Length: 224
Ligand code: CA
Image 1: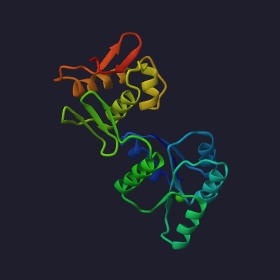
Image 2: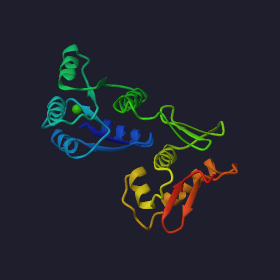
Image 3: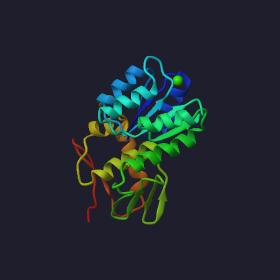
Image 4: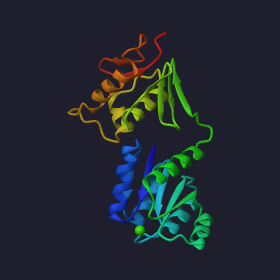
């Protein structure tokens, strides 16, 4: 899931980007209204977090331009003022939700997840293979009725493998989808993460679901 953050206050922007990354999202941060509009128009995001008070182009103008251009990406507006007229203006401009500053990060995360769910009503809430189940809403993984604790990145990795189960995924694809980075042959971040994930998901179970395909990548499949 890819999120665009448009926020000119350095501290808030950095805090949001870091928090969302730790929660398993890929987050891009821009600090200026014109850049925000450009990114919103040219890139595909699952959600935009839009500060209203911005230099060069304010949040309302960005929102209106995006909607007029046919972009239906859900937008969560951040406003410093809890004024009724601001909220009315935002609704008319096509905002999907609001948060008044200052806010708790947990509150923002709850709104983000709710908007992402709303945006994809037909999407399954659970992904499954054999006796392994991943609950996208509760961010929980169970195997054979046993809870498995994963880090945010491990969860993202397992989600990708589950969504494309049966397909051999190259390390480069995993690196770009889960870590948002270009594949660099010097790094073994994918191997290390897969090893850790496998220890949690497959060790102690007779049926091994994650398989290495030598020279190609990894595949999640039910061998039975
Ligand atoms: Ca601002």
